Image (cartoon, rainbow, N blue to C red):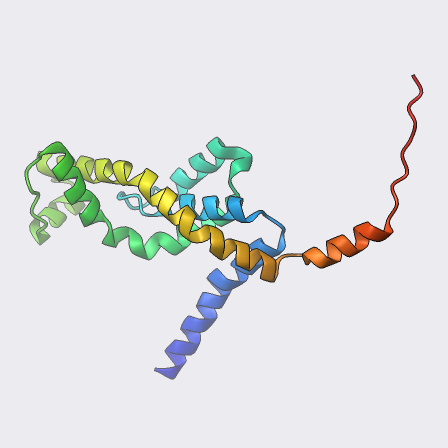
Length: 183
């Protein structure tokens, strides 16, 4: 049991802690990091498995400099274990919104999906889960941004590349020499 704890700690450090510290040391702004983390987790809980990386890529390409790509991908990776646990709540939310029938989650239905014999009900349930995710997305992004902003503000201060006092100290002793333009 002690070996598995050591392995888990080493894995967590290598896959999550070290990349996060590297991101913090590269000098990104806390607002950008908080927004990127919120986008990464939101895209990471998309109710169709296997497409979250593609969605994150589309989000990164669409948002451009508004988001920090490594942070989006790291938090997408962190959200992976949560993804499957949120499929059912998204499904139920979609059913409530559409007024659709309650889809029974049985092993038989899952077996039909995996063997390619999915019925129309299964496809409607996937659509309901997507609708539930789509409706929840803005609330999740805003809620996570509000949650992450103070965290990243503290983390950037603690792990940032240069402390604010060092920046002020060097700027006080340097003189700017301006060039005159000849027209």
